[in-house]
Length: 477
Image (cartoon, rainbow, N blue to C red; front, side, top):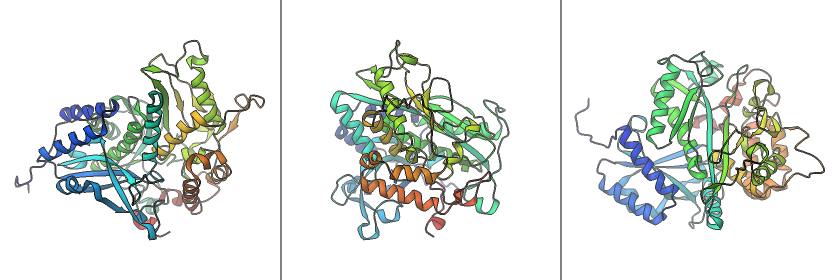
């Protein structure tokens, strides 16, 4: 029974949106981080209704981890936050377990209390070594450093917008119980753009979209997708690191809203055979001084020479970086040409089977769309790889005519692992130690799943999927 003793902060959604858009503007305008940090500390000290600060970070595979710190403790001990890195798959070993957390006060969010609980705010953290230096497996930190370097060099900014698809299945924890049920049950059997205003899928989409709007995502549109029980919620483009943070929050919000409704949100790329899978189409452009560097009204498909060079380098490295963009066994089910799958290593304005699409755009919206990324990819690692590849990757040899000769992405994770292992470019891009560590993690998951996928979803590819929350199961190997 509510006795009125707890008076923790609960902010209405319209005020939440105003606060979060203000915080986002500070970040987008690159206000001095020290000024932002002091502003946030003062806000938290003055706001008596805040009890805890959630600090979020992402591991090498893309799982989001969160620690709740008492507000008073964090404000006093911000310079000495530590955690056990050996408990995080892909992070440190047992004999070097202690890692540090630094607070990125620019990545600050006021939270909807019906999703996260009252009295909480969230900020993203930097993972650091014991000596305070950046931790190599924290690709959020590496993406932010890359973005800062590009801006410091000549004020170039990478803008991104992700279109993240997912499924909603009946029942709570549907992925975790797949070992018992061996199936997923659709919540809705509608279809593209089609659902009743108050059917269960629409209710889920509405509530999740409301929470995203309140957190400053700047929503554009949302709708059921092609497959039954499939959804997509679109929001506006923003700077690359902000965009990657929003991917993690998008999935977190979707999962919690679904659980509140007694159902499950899933970002498995292909949880059900026979219907379209889920992607994370990633729209990218480069901006300098307010000018879209990818736009040229006289260029092929309205894309500039720089834009086409960016595309060419990504296509030329398409097979090498496929494991980064499609990081799970299940992701290779999605790369099936029978279901609009983007498995062709080419660019096209209209062909949705192409790895890269050139959408119709104007001076503001001209961009490229990388369609082959699965929704379970680590967004920081994926964007870091795409940016570095687009700017510095090996160009195709014009004598070979690779843009004319269609090649295909691998159709299983074993081939993707082999191609990444054999790529000096990816080894140099990620660093030998991180490339090896990432490949080892993917090999471990692959070895617990069938090499020949077949037409039936296998229990192992769900249960050993890196995004399925099952600490008991993961600790068994």
